[in-house]
Length: 349
Image (cartoon, rainbow, N blue to C red; front, side):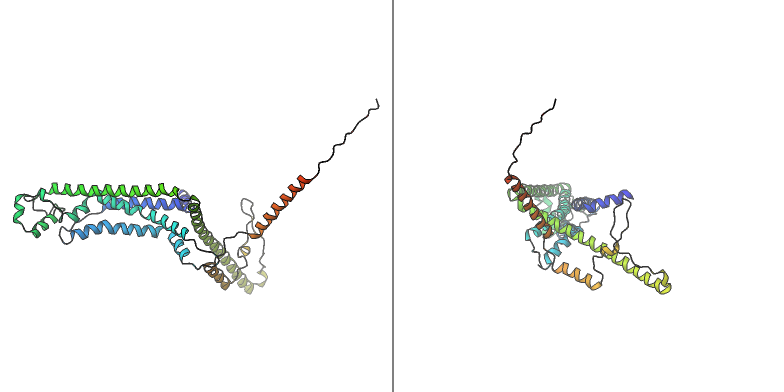
């Protein structure tokens, strides 16, 4: 249980590794789902194509949307895109970077599903068996059949148990012929995806790395800021609940036994096992003690986030410190060197 808890904490601390692991699990799940999926072709000319294309397209769309749902950054992106401008401007490059990174991860499972489906060939065989040109595998007796009857016969090729035209067409040869095209399309699809991914990674260094690092940094900042704000709200809510419950019990005990009521000690915290002094619940409230005040704080955080400027007074102090060091160095350089005086000692011996 402890190992599982440590693993969960590690994944929560490393959001990028966690999402990469989720995408890998989804890719394996898509391959496993297809292998356990029972492909049942209707073997009717009017339904074969719709069923096969649906199997090829609908699950990848579901995996793609599921990749967005499981990604926590989708809510961060939406919140950053829809929030009011306030005192902090919105950078479209950061939003594009966040959207592209989520899209790349969400595309892994759909790509695996399409590749596995094309390599297997069942969907391709079901979709195009009725309309493919299979004249090379037909006997001369097919000329007596009408076009609709021939199409209906070819549509039953994927279904071995209901196929009854062995004297007209070689089913095994037609099946191998169509599956060959399916595997060729699968390898072509994989080559295109690989080339596109290679070009994206190879062309990226050709652009400004400073702009890329800037967008990557601020995207991480937005995600980290939201996590820290949620943790701060949880800590404040926990302290607020503790103080309210404590005051409630003290008021009740004061009504029952007035002598037992004791004042709340403010500003004094307990020490933990490491000897570090912890803040008391009163100090963690940060002066926010009313419901209306807390609602105002949360509303202001949404409508008007603070500007990205950290501790202006410390910045001024650093500036003064730099000035003081420069003045000290100038004074040291302008100071005249002291003259050395010779001292003579005489011995009485």
